[in-house]
Image (cartoon, rainbow, N blue to C red; front, side):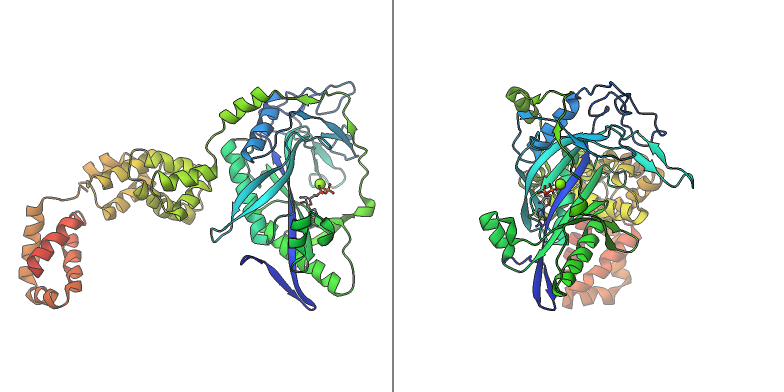
Length: 497
Ligand code: ADP
Ligand code: MG
């Protein structure tokens, strides 16, 4: 048993949870999966709907090559098998916002097969989650129930938008691991540029399958691959934030344990998470489950890819988060922790790389992770909305590195950059913030301070730590602009001999 096992004590003994996630990721593409209609978020209802998306009689879907390329790119980024032959199937069901009466999806032959993702828990330890498959499918439209008391409106802008469904193996063992998995997957997708990953905008939606079992059962499942060692699962549909994923799992695991301990059994069913109350509710049971009557879509040929095309996409893959993390440590000398924090967020990493370009990387990392993020978090701002640009922060760091300003003055300059903008070097020049390295000027101040405070000066000989008082006084007298190293050196010479 690993140190990270998540044990839920019940009335009849301990329990563990097992989870597999199905993630729907909206593909970054200007056009839909089978039509040329636009996909921009927030457009007026029904303004991005082609005849194909509205399912007019006689319409014919045409595959969007760009979307296929994005799916392949994602598969490669997940270290997964790319299937050169795949097929689109019709998944038949009626839904008011699905005008075709079926969803075009991939069932038996997905474009991407097995892969895996390495994820990090909060304490930095790693675990691996197997990927079962990734397939392409169409999104449905949206029913709007709250515009009119007597009718439901439908917005077909989303109808036909390309989704990648990414199905994990049931290798996730705690609420923390579930959110870490989604966070890592989202980071990879964002690095690849294949999904925006914004859960609030519905670009990434998670269906969470949860079951409970006794300790030791999961290990038997992993050894044999036999699912009968695991408990019956329930699927919680469309959970749309990392926090809700954790909450939904905690609630659902306890619910299942209570039922089993009361002598009942778990019905395999689809449930909904109510974020307001934190509970999951039954949506439909397995008995009511749809028979989708999958069959190959006769309007579409099987998808055949050339290995050379796949190889070209592989050659063009960007640096991925794990590679970046390793490089930040090995090439730039950052700590494991800083490298992990920076690489986990593509925007943060991009910003950092501009700041650090040709500069002191450790100093750059410390400023980005501490000063900048401290300030951004305080104001509730995203790094993409930072009032201080990476170029400005880089300029500020250059001034610290070449001793033009001290770290302390740099914080003042940072405040000016934040509220007024401007060029760091110009601000330092205009406001006269340059660090005084002229030892003569510093010496004069020190001599005067020693003469004015003979008792304190004598005390330093017995208690060298009290020299800090003099450092503070020199800085105060020189408005913080004295070079701290020079101040310390001169003080030591004069007071300690
Ligand atoms: P379906 O086709 O009914 O959706 P799948 O076999 O595709 O079923 O599984 C869907 C998801 O459920 C996968 O992510 C898988 O890892 C997960 N899963 C399967 N069995 C279990 C289980 N016993 N406990 C938790 N998750 C499970
Ligand atoms: Mg499924």
